Length: 168
Image 1 (cartoon, rainbow, N blue to C red):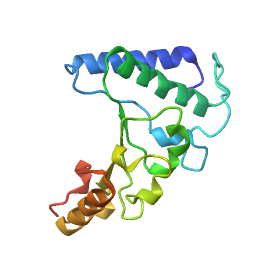
Image 2: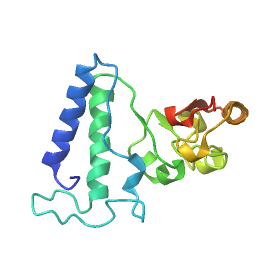
Image 3: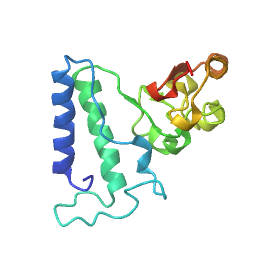
């Protein structure tokens, strides 16, 4: 529920508790950060219509506020960076100016989406280009080397999700 300020406080508190319970080593934002964009792939495209408290006009507005609150908590209170993993970098660029992450993981991870031209205003040094996260794109070592080369040429980071399975 991204329509209520109270619900956002609960989500942030959950992240703080989770972070502390893992010895300050892990947290989970609990949100796909590029779903703030209205569209067919977003489960939150319209106005807030839940019967409870509504502090935001749309769930996307509430979701943006949630990201900002997480950033204030981790950056301002604990001086820690915060990362996010948009499914596609280009979908987050409008929010980058108001809720930037310290590091972005490009979850889509294809040769086209790993290229700096897909990042928009997001600096390539803040992006970790990745092998595909989908099982349909099981990556091999030549593809891993190609992706690492893209990262090196544009000054990005390199990595992959566990499902990429570069050893297959």
